Amino acid sequence: MSKPFELPQEMTIYSAVETRDALLGWVTEQSAKSSKLIEISAAQVAEIDGAGLQLLAALSNTGQNWRLVNPSNAFADACKALGLSNWLDQSPVNF
Image 1 (cartoon, rainbow, N blue to C red):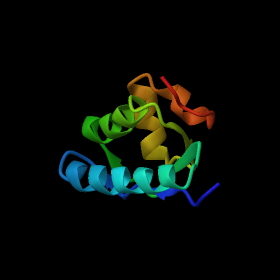
Image 2: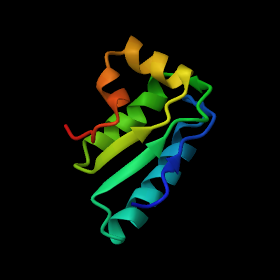
Image 3: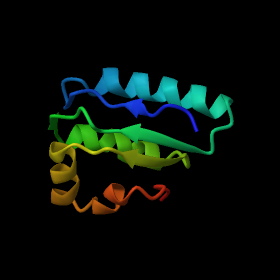
Image 4: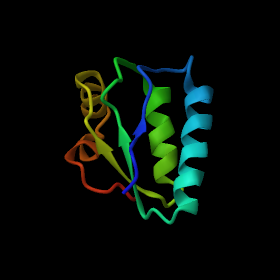
Protein backbone atom coordinates (compact mmCIF):
# COMPACT_ATOMS: atom_id res chain seq x y z
CA MET A 1 0.00 0.00 0.00
CA SER A 2 1.26 3.49 -0.80
CA LYS A 3 1.69 6.46 1.49
CA PRO A 4 -1.66 8.00 2.54
CA PHE A 5 -2.93 11.25 1.06
CA GLU A 6 -2.58 13.94 3.73
CA LEU A 7 -5.62 16.16 4.01
CA PRO A 8 -4.74 19.80 4.70
CA GLN A 9 -5.14 21.56 8.02
CA GLU A 10 -8.07 23.57 6.65
CA MET A 11 -10.79 21.65 4.85
CA THR A 12 -13.36 24.37 4.29
CA ILE A 13 -15.19 25.97 1.41
CA TYR A 14 -12.21 28.32 1.03
CA SER A 15 -9.80 25.49 0.22
CA ALA A 16 -12.22 23.04 -1.40
CA VAL A 17 -11.15 23.48 -5.04
CA GLU A 18 -7.45 23.28 -4.23
CA THR A 19 -7.94 20.20 -2.04
CA ARG A 20 -10.19 18.54 -4.63
CA ASP A 21 -7.64 19.02 -7.39
CA ALA A 22 -4.80 17.64 -5.27
CA LEU A 23 -6.88 14.68 -4.12
CA LEU A 24 -8.11 13.79 -7.61
CA GLY A 25 -4.58 13.99 -9.00
CA TRP A 26 -3.33 11.72 -6.24
CA VAL A 27 -6.20 9.23 -6.73
CA THR A 28 -5.47 9.10 -10.47
CA GLU A 29 -1.81 8.41 -9.72
CA GLN A 30 -2.71 5.64 -7.25
CA SER A 31 -5.18 4.09 -9.69
CA ALA A 32 -2.43 3.93 -12.33
CA LYS A 33 -0.34 1.97 -9.82
CA SER A 34 -3.23 -0.49 -9.39
CA SER A 35 -3.84 0.38 -5.75
CA LYS A 36 -7.18 -1.17 -4.91
CA LEU A 37 -7.49 0.55 -1.53
CA ILE A 38 -6.20 4.03 -0.86
CA GLU A 39 -5.66 5.62 2.52
CA ILE A 40 -6.50 9.20 3.39
CA SER A 41 -5.02 10.73 6.52
CA ALA A 42 -6.96 13.39 8.41
CA ALA A 43 -4.35 13.79 11.14
CA GLN A 44 -3.64 17.44 10.33
CA VAL A 45 -7.24 18.61 9.90
CA ALA A 46 -7.95 21.37 12.41
CA GLU A 47 -10.86 23.07 10.68
CA ILE A 48 -13.54 21.41 8.56
CA ASP A 49 -16.97 22.25 7.23
CA GLY A 50 -19.56 20.60 5.03
CA ALA A 51 -17.64 21.37 1.84
CA GLY A 52 -14.62 19.50 3.20
CA LEU A 53 -16.69 16.44 4.00
CA GLN A 54 -18.41 16.65 0.61
CA LEU A 55 -15.03 16.13 -1.06
CA LEU A 56 -14.70 12.73 0.56
CA ALA A 57 -18.35 11.90 -0.05
CA ALA A 58 -17.76 12.62 -3.74
CA LEU A 59 -14.74 10.31 -3.68
CA SER A 60 -17.01 7.59 -2.33
CA ASN A 61 -19.23 8.01 -5.39
CA THR A 62 -16.37 7.25 -7.79
CA GLY A 63 -16.28 3.59 -6.79
CA GLN A 64 -12.76 3.97 -5.40
CA ASN A 65 -12.28 2.08 -2.13
CA TRP A 66 -10.64 4.23 0.50
CA ARG A 67 -9.94 4.15 4.19
CA LEU A 68 -9.55 7.05 6.60
CA VAL A 69 -6.51 6.90 8.86
CA ASN A 70 -5.51 9.01 11.84
CA PRO A 71 -8.55 11.31 12.03
CA SER A 72 -7.98 14.42 14.11
CA ASN A 73 -10.48 15.30 16.83
CA ALA A 74 -11.92 18.08 14.65
CA PHE A 75 -12.40 15.68 11.75
CA ALA A 76 -13.92 12.97 13.96
CA ASP A 77 -16.32 15.46 15.56
CA ALA A 78 -17.48 16.68 12.13
CA CYS A 79 -18.06 13.10 10.96
CA LYS A 80 -20.07 12.27 14.07
CA ALA A 81 -22.16 15.45 13.75
CA LEU A 82 -23.15 14.56 10.18
CA GLY A 83 -23.73 10.85 10.73
CA LEU A 84 -20.53 9.73 9.02
CA SER A 85 -19.15 7.77 11.95
CA ASN A 86 -18.63 4.75 9.71
CA TRP A 87 -15.72 6.64 8.12
CA LEU A 88 -13.94 6.54 11.48
CA ASP A 89 -13.78 2.76 11.95
CA GLN A 90 -10.90 2.42 9.42
CA SER A 91 -12.79 -0.05 7.28
CA PRO A 92 -12.77 0.53 3.53
CA VAL A 93 -15.43 3.03 2.48
CA ASN A 94 -17.43 2.06 -0.58
CA PHE A 95 -21.00 3.16 -1.12
